[in-house]
Image 1 (cartoon, rainbow over the protein chains, first blue to last red):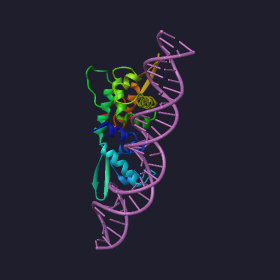
Image 2 (image 1 turned 120 degrees about the vertical axis):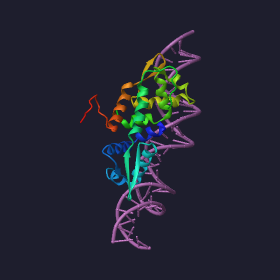
Image 3 (image 1 turned 45 degrees about the vertical axis):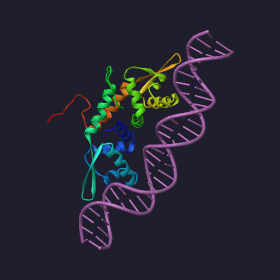
Amino acid sequence: MGFAETFKALSDTVRREILILLRQGRMSAGEIGSHFNMTGATISYHLGILKKADLVYEQREKNFVYYELNISAIGEVMLWLSDLKGEPKDGKIEKA
Amino acid sequence: MGFAETFKALSDTVRREILILLRQGRMSAGEIGSHFNMTGATISYHLGILKKADLVYEQREKNFVYYELNISAIGEVMLWLSDLKGEPKDGKIEKA
DNA sequence: TTGGTATTTAGAATTATTTCTAAATACTAT
DNA sequence: ATAGTATTTAGAAATAATTCTAAATACCAA
């Protein structure tokens, strides 16, 4: 999975807003873009980063591309954080 | 708090490794640096970013600066993620 | 096929991030 | 006060990220 990619994806405000939009359900690239004051090319760039981070996946239908939240990837990030919060365990090896 | 700053801080591998080191308890800047193959100046730069993101706080003693995890900031990130996932915020679980 | 809509890719400009060296600051101890 | 240790700051170089315009791809409909 790669936490670097995942946290990097989450570190951009536009991308976090895209994820929040997708809480309501899947949405086409165009509809996502209509919520922002940026070109479709830029939105496509951000969607690509979210997809590479596995935070969303896409479904192609007709000539639309729909994006949807990948809940389980979010769960993995939460696990990493909860482990960070947890009590120190001797000898435990952590992956960054 | 600012999630942009927080996720940006978490998006760098060195900084995530620093946080994992700090699970064991507070550590001076120098000791943190000794775990990495980078100059003290670079470590200081990363510590500054973690501090601005509120992920760590510092305690000055003698001529050492100790850094410590800020657990509650990690909790806030987890809340944001759990909200994205659509989980109930309390223990309240609604059943039909 | 031709044209239209949806989306992505390529390339370039701008800005941000990471890292270093060198210098500065802060504190300790003699 | 002087020297020594710990850490940060400043400035510069290299790399990465974000955004745009223009062009390309993909798919549908007549």
